Length: 96
Image (cartoon, rainbow, N blue to C red; front, side, top):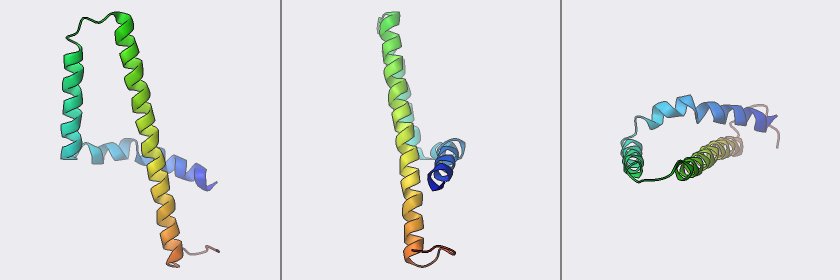
């Protein structure tokens, strides 16, 4: 049960709510602009449709992998937070 709740929270927090935080971060914005510039430059190459599709699939797979990494990092952070609160006896109703 714990993992399913954490999974739901992670999807919510690393999704739309997290977007608000990320889109306000100057470093993220700078890196995202660099990616956009590279995508623009890639468009200047004379690539076949098949090559473009393969690059698109590669980038999509990489983005999905990074998204899952973010979800897992969030879940682990939540678990670590609960463990710290438990160690400090700040979690009510918890038995060790």
